Image (cartoon, rainbow, N blue to C red; front, side, top):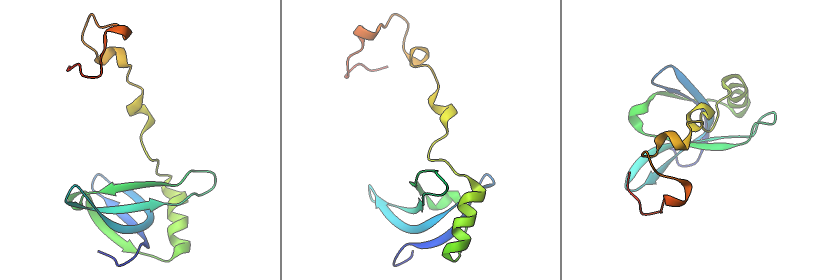
Length: 106
């Protein structure tokens, strides 16, 4: 993709946008677009990897424009509401905390 990470605005399918320094990365033999979102106004830096089919457009921009976009988009590393599913609700009935072993299959 790019020889080095460059500041970009990335448009994703589903009307989502993210901005950061874009490069490519190979994981498990598959190629991904890597977006390194910098720390801005107290929001921590994070990295996201996207498959090529998730991307609608990539627009290279200057550093200042990328930082403005990071502030405007307020992207987060992971959606908190997706993490708040009670663990107990996903376990089979009858399992207690002491009954679960690392090798148990659900």
